[in-house]
Length: 121
Image (cartoon, rainbow, N blue to C red; front, side, top):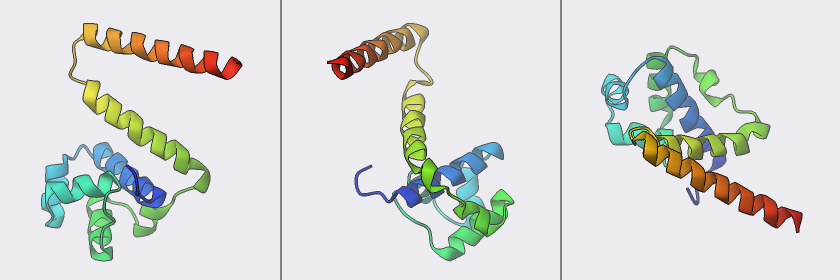
C-alpha cells in the first residue's frame, strides 16, 4: 500500500462498497463499463485513479451521482485505510476452516496483549 494516496484508497473503497451493495461482481461491473476486472480491482484497491470518463460510467452503473463518489471526510481517511486492511484480512480468511480461524484469533490476542504490555512500560 506504500505510495497510495489516501483519497485514491477512499475512492476505491467507496466503489467497492457500492458495487457490493448492488451485488455486482468485479467482472460484471467491468464488463458493464467496458473495462477489465483488473482495472476495477486496481481502482478499488487505490492502486490507480480512474479517468473522468470511467468515473461517470461507474456512477451510472452504480446508480449514484458522480459527486457522491468523491464525498470523503478527512477524519475518516485513517479509518478507511484500516477498513481496507481489515477487508484484505477478511478476504484471506473467509474460506478457511474454523480451527484455522481460532488459531488466527489466538495469535491476534497474543499480539494485542504484547502491544498493550509494551504501552504500559
